[in-house]
Image (cartoon, rainbow, N blue to C red):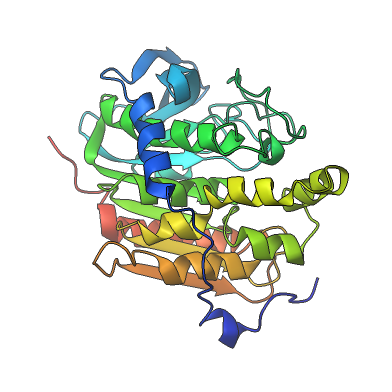
Length: 334
């Protein structure tokens, strides 16, 4: 697929106006307040991951509406000191999979919490364990269109709330330094990590790659690839529902979360990405931190000949080097 979005010189200036609802902050403040709990953890149990150099625990924490959300918590085996933490968010349709699948951050010296996606896990990978008991509002079968006609019913209100609660859960787990927590994700996980950056003011870092939910209105005009294609397919059947759908999506727009973020941030984007068009990443990047009165440290790496895979392992190597400078995994806290 050749480059199909704006030319690079225009992307580097792309900062579109936002259709942001006036009650955006009130909506999220109330949503997160309702999910607060003095004891974020429900259960933590060690599991046999089949590995000698990594220890893993099955974690269940309280998410949206107090619902139980599953996660894997992994640390380098035998490390007695507090380590900086990484909360990783999985892609669209994926669950947390198996405990030995995603170990890059653990092997780099971090305490890692890999959050399950509620009501997902059946499209790719090795499944999930978290139900979504609230997925009964009007909408299509895919997560992005569940509850699409009302922001209070939308799937991403619940998933993003889970993600904020995951930060609180990692801070409560033994062996993680609560002052050095980063949010990390690609695709849907990147969009969720960006939302966390905008909603958790004392987050230490955010690593956002090919994020879903950024520049949503433009993405719907550019691509029929899923997940955006699922929205188009729903609206093709439910003619006249566009206004309600666009209103709901405005509450999960990544550029709006980016405006409120203040943690150092690392972005990655493939310029031939037809799943999450690159203009959305640039829109979020250029608005990052603009409402905070600060100019957060941030950088963006673009890969001109890559699609949704972005820089792949090359980009991960850049992420490792960047986060090493921000969170200093070699510095342990007694």
